[in-house]
Length: 260
Image: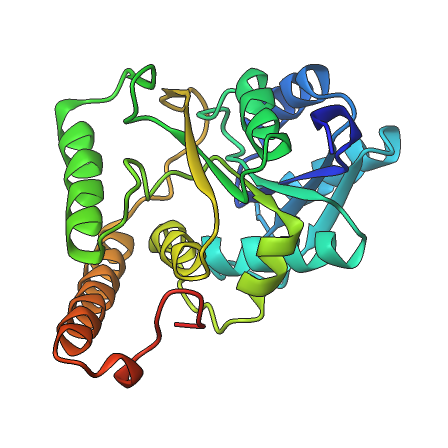
């Protein structure tokens, strides 16, 4: 299926993104006019959901999923994926509401899916990828987190924490059948390792990542702690499986292609 034939749904989770969302949606609808957009709003008190309802009334390619409250990035994406899979979309995309992911670069991800990839990651850390206007602290945190996750879990991915992604629906159906319980930004690492364990074709394409110009970042110390604890646990489990396999006990844990 060519990129132009794909039925694409871009899932955008929101919480208090009233200032940033209009510009992001405008750029997205201009860049990939055939794509549909699902705004998954976690009952934003700033009126994001109400603004999104108005946008959906004016544009039949925009849809809104109202959620009961702020439950985290992972649950918002899983709810959006379920909505899209029920409606038969071929490719489902993750994208931030604040335009830190450039909508104009989405065709790069969709082209890679059309070429055969199951999961395409818009990567900051492959050749050609760039981060703009980040302080040194955030650069070190992001690069360090990706190196730690990659080394501990054997992920052959440069940017496992990236949030600009395109999933082929056939892979995503298998992923959402699993008990994915990650709340914050470690959700991206979780989905990457699960896709790897299912034998998915994972590719990275370079993107530009821009610091948000409007609204407030959702990153917190609690999110960082969750990611550190879970990535460490997953990594130790992965290493234990490798040791058991080397000792001749491959049946002691899930292997490539099985549900982890």
